[in-house]
Amino acid sequence: MEVRNFNLNTNTIEVEDFILKDSKVIANLPKGSASADSETELVQVKNDSVIAVAFPDMNINVGSILLDNNYFEIHRGNKVATKGSFDPDHMVLSDLNLEIFDISLSKEGAALELKSFDFKERSEWELKSLSFNLKASEKSFALDALKFQTAYSRVSMDLAMSYSSLDDLINRSENATLDLDFDPSILSLQDAFYFAPELRKDTVFGTFSQ
Image (cartoon, rainbow, N blue to C red):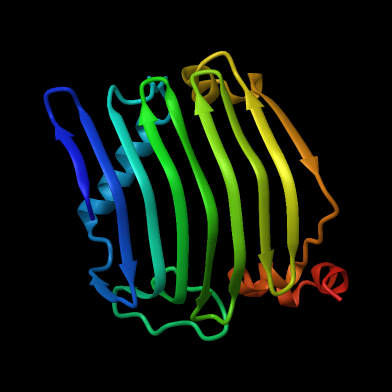
C-alpha cells in the first residue's frame, strides 16, 4: 500500500493503491454478548428519533483496491455450520477477486468504479461477477451500468435516486424518487434458496423456481 498523503489536520487521506494477492485470512470471533444485545436495543431506540446525516468533512482518495485470488474465513461462536446454505456465523469466501478504482469521499459526496467482484461461498453459492459505477451527493445517488451474475441469475440495470437531502432520505424516505432502468435480465429463486433454505418447502416458491 502506497500512502501519498495522510494529514489529520486537514482530514486528508490519499492512497495510491491497496493490493492483496494470494492471501488467506481466518478470523474467529466470539458470539454476541449481553452488552452487545443492549447496544442493539439502544440503536433501535435511537432509530425512533430523527437522525442527522451528512457526508463526513474529510477528503479521502484511493486510486485502487485490488484483491487477487484471496481466501477469507470468518466464524462467530461455536455453533456447527449449516451445510448447503449461507450461514452468517460461518462465512468462507474463496477465489475472491476485487477491482475498485477512483474511490473518493468528501463532504460533497462519494464516488467509485467497481470494475469486478467475484467469489465462491462455502454454501456453494457463487458470485460470478458484479460491477457498477457509483456516485452519491447530498441530493442524488446513482448506480450506473450495474451488472450482476450468479450461476442462476443475470441482472443488468441502472439505478437513480433523488432526494432533497440526506437527512430527508434517512428520516423521510417516502419522499425520495427512485428510477430503475432494466436491460433484459433473469432473476432466479434458486439464489434465494441458499440464503433462505426454508423457501424450498414452500409450494408457491417451488413452482416458480422450476
